Image (cartoon, rainbow, N blue to C red; front, side, top):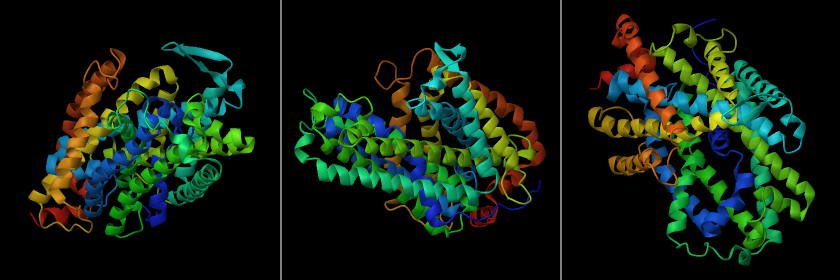
Length: 477
């Protein structure tokens, strides 16, 4: 192993591929008709429009920070200049929950779950049951095999992972274009009526659905995890962050529109697999193609999550939170191999819990990511005041006012699930319990790390996290 530098191999289009494909997952291919039933086509489409605008506000703050401090670890590095070790730790610990125990672990289950539609044999040979949900041996083995595949893909270097991502991403966009063309050729605008469910107002439905869209648009922040590996200027890096969320939002809007006009909403709301079944009613092969889009959305999101999760572990090692060995790089491939191993092992272990237990972690992932968002948005605002001379190749339009609007949105995203008794609330007692346990474990880890932080010294930790940006920040205070 070597502690040499990370290889700068991620191109601008590679960033867009990781960002957009990390956002565009799989459930849009089969959930759209259920959303039409609850919120109406108008509520879904206008909700995605509002959600995209709101997510873009947050992305603008990330773009300014990512361009100003283009370092691995994203939020972990952003938080240090304004919040110190406490802020960096809080961001890291919440993102660990979001990226590794949430996203990466879910795909261990999600892959066999999606394939079981065609291969029901995967749901045989139950070996144990957790939270009332059986875990099947073939499904578990397939999920582990998928995790090992993405480990190997990323172990061999970010260039290989990028190539895979770009091919899959282009295929995904192509299938989305097919769905839109089919809808325009075979469908009708009249199929969208009624735009809103009976008894739901044209204002209530879009706003209610907007909260759901935020969950669909969260993947953009992972780009800041690979800042040092991007082979673009700081300004282009910031631009890639904003474009990723904006274009992903546009993709969702067009696909929801396609599903809404493809057939009468009174019929589509009775379909169990959304766009997949809608396309299949026109021609069976089209249904298989749309299923393929869902499959690709899963694997590209998984690939992006592995990249982000391993770089998070890498940054946690840089700040002295976990042993130094996890920030060592492979001498040939330039990848943080030990960090990849740790994140993969943790994801497999949590994936073995099965969907019944893992859903608790998935539901609190939104809160965890929201906390990291909040830390970053506040960092952007405070850094403008504290470090006014810091070079900002990408500046957020509206500056502090845009940041304040983004912070208000983040506050809603974090607090709404924590308020008991609403349709967005966490489940009592399991999900509240998991969140409390995670915070307690974090407090234990934080205080047990203090001795190591004292040995390393604050300047060493800051230089590890910020690299060349340390002098740019502190020489211009």
